[in-house]
Length: 396
Image (spheres, rainbow, N blue to C red):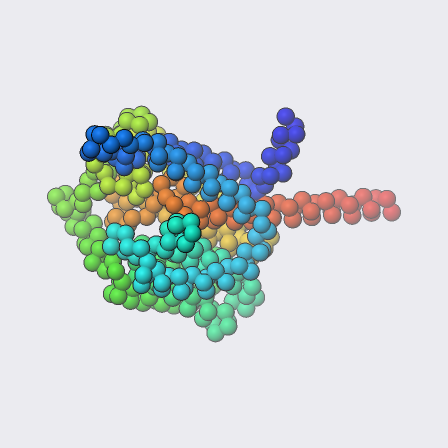
């Protein structure tokens, strides 16, 4: 038993609470997605044999792959991510352009590129978001002593945020807005003056406005905002997705209908991704919904504890940015499900069925754990050095 504990301590370093939260949500994701994908395997042709477990196996493999990626990412010293971040950020810009021009079109938006050989689609916006957050943390950390230098420090940051947010916004406005908010939070923690933050807001709004006017989803974005505002005064204008989500939540009650007993999964669009939180509330009730919310808030709290305890500016800013990005997206997804925001199409991190988005989520969590792991090692090393010096003094 002691050998097993020693092996676990050696292989799974970093914040143990984050490990526990991620594993709990991942296992719960398999259960909920299996229940919510019932409509995907429904066949009108009764002579057709459908493997009802195909989505269970596929999603389980992706969840396992994301955990493996998280483990590998947490093994890499977090300082190395500063070297890779800017390279991948520059790489993501042409990928976003290519995706917009010739990417796979799903739901009237070109967000996906297909990776040759393995024939797997992925969203370059996931790579752009992750690399921009890491690059921003690295640039701010490197220039903490000269943070007021506009041309040398802030101008490259502002241009990077504006360009990438605008390119993402042309096909996925909700992701672009959340990325801009995350960048502002990183800059605020990084001691960027308020007047410069205001400039970032102006540049961001300008870039997103251009993206709205020239992008593929202009009508969809504006209509969703308009419909959400109108539905507050007129219940007849509530969108079909939102209406079905409200029914699922209302019928779930306090304790829910039980695992696998959802009825709205048969009528609610995308119950396994965009509206998976509604299925959670229907099957597990308010108890399950509040528990999931608590786990995300706990994840944010642990991520911010890493920021507070970090010995290096880069590690703290990196952990803060990635924690905010994951949890804010989760809160927005849950807010949409309960009617507190317009429909966005954002999945629930760690819980929704997805493809490579799960891999990027695992990478982000692995980097957060890498920061925690690095700081723990530095504290242990400092404590060891202090003990050695104390022993030497006593011997002398």
